Image: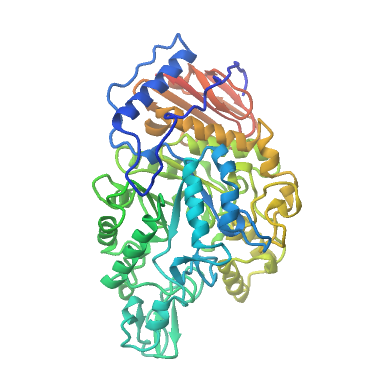
Length: 608
């Protein structure tokens, strides 16, 4: 960016709003209203000290309905790929425990664990055969309890992945259910008689490709599986199923976890005879019942995965008076990049104006009620810097820009493992290198449909789930320091230069940029609670928005372009202030005419 002024962050910029917070997550926790008021006053006072000429006005009224997770940052761990402690090539719970100091240094508050339950691993743990046991390859229940305890000692909570739309076909409930048509567990799942021609009851399709019904020869009926055939769907219309689920949830909550991420939770209200899969008529009845039966009286974090969510329905899930969930993941910014016919397997050209429209819509829709979950990636999505940035030409700059844009929005940020060091998509060359069941199923179907192997691999390398599942790159040691054995899936060959050990020793690294952003969220209430306003909505290369809390204003300017961008700034945004984050050089001014460097991002704290 030119021209530039120079500014330096105060030495205590990353001080937390409170020095200590009790993380006994099984019990009600969080800051009191008095503590939060002090935090707001403290943040404004620090801004005033940094720029004494600026008459900062401290709001007299504290933001309503303050929750401890509003200023938190969540870090997702995919256990199979995070850290292998015993050399079998598979990440495990002791490996996660061994890396808690790393996560504490990063500054995160919550670890979301992808499934650790006992499972035949047809879908890498999202097919559960025992909800109250830990998969042996991941460790033991004692290992898990130690992880919870050690994490809590570092001010970090653990949330579990709750997968209750379906189970494994090896779950005892399903083994009973398929024995006879009158088995007491028969109605734990969704069974239907064949159609008149002997085929499936209807034409519902699996998300992994092919029909969503499989014929079971023992009773001659079809069972529903909206994902793999080895993931039969539970029948949530059966109150006995719901009671079992709630009892299991309470069992884990009593072990001290901090909450749940709920897998495809918008599916549980399905009505298959009407071919209604998501947002069924009783979905919210079930969630309210779940809330009342399990976590409603505990101060924990709950987030639902809801591919079908709209801004309107998100308020049904997370509105303050709904008594359902804290927030939901919405995927509109993900699916808008997909081809209308081929979906994610053939992405559309990146459309920044469209992305800004989606983010802006959600920011405004949940401005006064509900709450946003902010994310670029997860275990199902490609690496953020490969999808939205420039992983080869401007790797560090674009990764930092993406982090800046996301973390300064209103909502709770989620960081997927390796994102904080700029891990990239994996350059697979053969279908034999893939492990993901969805990719393997879609490869078979696409080959049958006439797609060339090269074209499929190209699409899978852009959007396949295994991009996010390659092992965490800890160092330049063999296999990226992930395992002393042979990893279950190949390590990205760029681990020699892209790794945590190297990033932590470089003050200008992507890792340190994330660390600063996480600390800034705790230090500045305007980042947590400020109103969002977009600017230059249709600009094809630049994302500009402001956040405002009383008279404190944050201005964010970010370029998504690999070239220089000359930007005429709206008069209302021309200002002087305190630069709190940058990825080139800091500037204490937003000027009427700016030149942004490739993928440059800057945030200026000022007084409106």
